[in-house]
Length: 469
Image 1 (tube, helix red, strand yellow):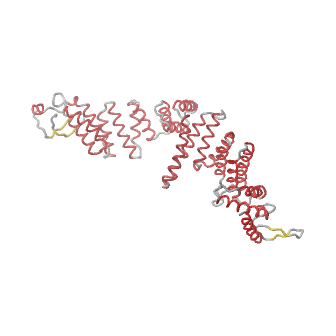
Image 2: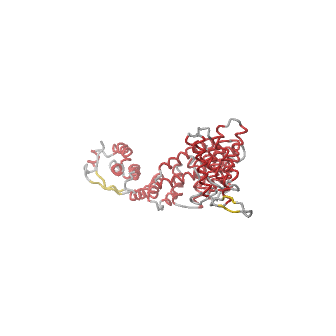
Image 3: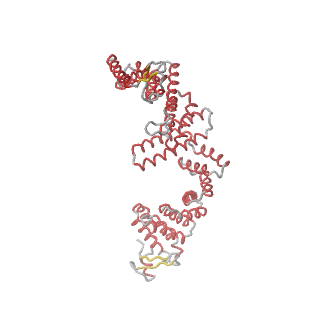
């Protein structure tokens, strides 16, 4: 098998050598030169070409055997010669070299030898960076990609060199930014954790780098979704899940709050920091901590927007700080996003209802309905206010109950507009229908079931006379 391979190699080499042009030296002797620059193939171009052909032919056999053939031993010698003597001959020298070194490392039992092989693998990456820093097709720099692979391999094969790994991967991510490879981001984040555990980095760096790599992954998920690349969307979601799982032990709300409270105290006007705090606490479901609201309010002061006002309003509403929430929701209604504006009007109505400003709450609920008629929730809000104020809308057994008719009307409207409100509406209809005036009371006051009736209170509604059941 080997003799046939050698015969094939020799024949192909003979053809290659014949194709190389002659160059005459000053002393009258001829030498063979490739078409490219002399330096590409080193000082001994013929031997370079021979060794490239040798190792490449054996490499084909090795690959064909699914990397199990003992021919790997025949690859190493000629490959090493090429690597050492004509480093610019082909980028394949480094691509193949990585695969060869990985195989040798994984199959080496002697620790000292294995360490030297890891060093050689690092040299392969370094030499590729030196001679082939740009992509052969696009001409663009591939420095970050090579550094990324180098760092991942160093982490894989020698975990004790974590500081070196960290510096390599940090450089890769700094260069590539949003274009960083997902695997590189995973290993970079792991190296940061290792550095922090070994007291080589402040533990706050874990949080900072987590925020950085998640932002990059989110950016790519959005981009890939727009491109319709569902396969890579899933890949990047998996990368994100991996990093989230790794971060989990460091993600407790008390730890995050402790780290970022100190940072905010020192830099209260740093908008980038404030955005990082709110984004991170939001991601980790730590919105209930006072720091989240404090950072949100401070960010809104520095960079006010309807969106930030909306978020603050929601936080204050959740804490039942209704009076404080109102001005934020009012500002949020100015959003150019119709959905956000609609939600702001709806929540503003809820907040005003909570402080019993019913007339204005009704106005805001009607605004929400105007923007999104298919949302039944604002009808529920109006109905609740009608029911809550029924006793204040009359001064006798009849007039103090007529507002329940209007409340039930609104609940029915909610169901018609929005099926999702059916359960809530039916529950209220069942509750408040029993408070309708009795048939005797209706008759006593000169009215008749089924006839129209106008309610005059803080609101004015046309409704139908109905008796309690």
